Image 1 (spheres, rainbow, N blue to C red):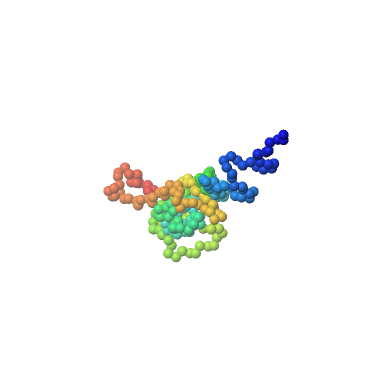
Image 2 (cartoon, rainbow, N blue to C red):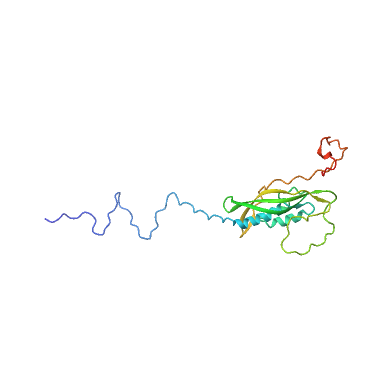
Length: 226
């Protein structure tokens, strides 16, 4: 007797898996769709500003930010606008009450640290000289045109001004947020509170017959600068 007839698949054939016949699939058919969907592709991270360039921008901004002159507030707005990412409200009053006079002389940028994607914070120390009003002051009625000089304007007023006297200098420390936008570095300061609030304007001098002046008030001391 010969061998029993074969009951399985012939040579080269593939046995169908258990559970019933399945539809044949060609080599170029799409794979079955995942019923739960595919995970979202994360967006590329925003580039982080170069530390050296961010420090240079933050130092320049800090000097302009901590300078002001109530006799020429528009100049401050024109200068600060170039640091900001998009045109918006007038930045002349950014971090400033609108009164007084102060001149920032130079800045020392320090630590640069990441603050989220594409944003860094630069620690900056700035030496500033405040001024006290000692007489009538205001914009000159007919100012001479400024001579053409190299570079771009800064906010810092002139070292001396009519009706103002300079006081002792001090150091102020602020953190400046820097981001990359539109192919350049800008200061992200619209919603930031940089440093401390500007000091209020000095009160007007009081005389000895002022009933609100106490006997032990230091303002009553003869020769007082205030």
